[in-house]
Structure formats: structure tokens, C-alpha cells
Picture 1 (cartoon, rainbow over the protein chains, first blue to last red):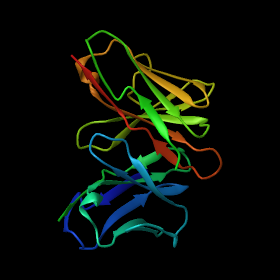
Picture 2: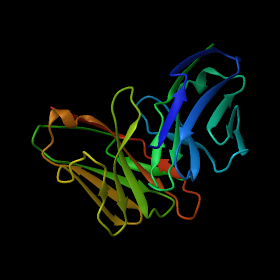
Picture 3: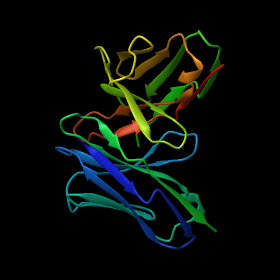
Picture 4: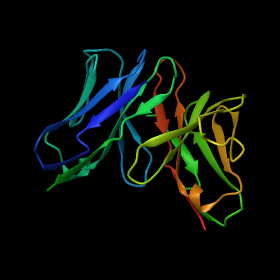
Length: 110
Length: 116
């Protein structure tokens, strides 16, 4: 069964304290690994898509990487406005549907 | 990035009435749209996949007669919650997949439904 697991469930950082969020996946025929940011009461905001192991993408303070078993979202020198829930999702080749993890709730304190 | 809108953002209705939620892709044509439901502090639960011009495909456990989905054009999908009950109160979010081979999926801002 296809599955996506995110850790930690919650993470509290001080402003400027870099860290990484983990997304482990077992998705048959993975077509892409997606990262989204979701603020309370809003829909997920697209961040990255990674398609193959070894691929990396960056956007401002965020950098996403992908291996054959997991993906990391690295946050460098975070700011309070980076506080949100970060969702990881794998697109199954057989189902053609996104399979979401439960998310990591990130809080960055000034 | 691609933009998806939803309307209304919030709706309150009485038990037994029906509510329609619209989802539009504003700057691209979407042959495939998706409807999700999200409970507080939980991840997104896929309800159905909507393909333009054909019947929606519902996930197991989702009542197709209760949650009517119509994808009549390449930029519009609608979800109608029929005979709503308090247990249907939730956050409903649509998404649209961009054309081509990127498989990128963009989400709308969501609709908060409260059934009294």
C-alpha cells in the first residue's frame, strides 16, 4: 500500500535556526514528490515538485531534496513568516493521485 | 504559478439544504480537478477526481449521491453537497492539475462549510 510519512509532527525553531523536515515514502511508480505549505484556514500553496532521486530545488530559504526513499525540506535561517504546516505528497503511478503525509507544523519564534 | 479560485470562501446553511461550491482554474485549462476534505489538524482526504466532460470518480466511502460533482468546462468544477447535515461541516478544498507532463497540482483557498 502506498504511504507517505512525515516527521517530526511539530517543530519549534528560533529565528535563524536552520533545520530539516523529513518525508519518507513508499509509493509505487512514483511520478513526482510534492511539497506544499499550508497556513491555517487556507488551501495548500505549491512549493516544489521533485521527479527523480538526486534532484534538488530551491526557493528563498527552502531547499528540497529527493532520494529513492525519502525527501527533505531544508529551511535555512528561518523567519517567523515561515511558520506553517508543510505537507509532502507522492504522486502514485498506478493511482495517479496525490498521497499526502500528515504534515509538519513548523513554528519559528522571533 | 497557476491560480485556482474557490467560491464561496465560507458558507453557513441549514440542515437539509443543498450547497454548491465552485472551483475555477484562472490562468490554465485543467482537464483534471480534485476535491478534498480536511478536518481540523488533519491532512487532506481526497473525495473525488473530476475529469472534464465525464463522470467523477469517487473515493471509497464517499457518497456520490450526496456530493455531486460536475466538471462542465476546462476551467470550472462544482461540488454540490445535497441535503447537508451537521456532520458535513468541514473545510472543502479543490485542486487543478496543469496540462502537460509536469503533474503539478494547484489548490484553491478552500471553502469552510458550516451546517446548522
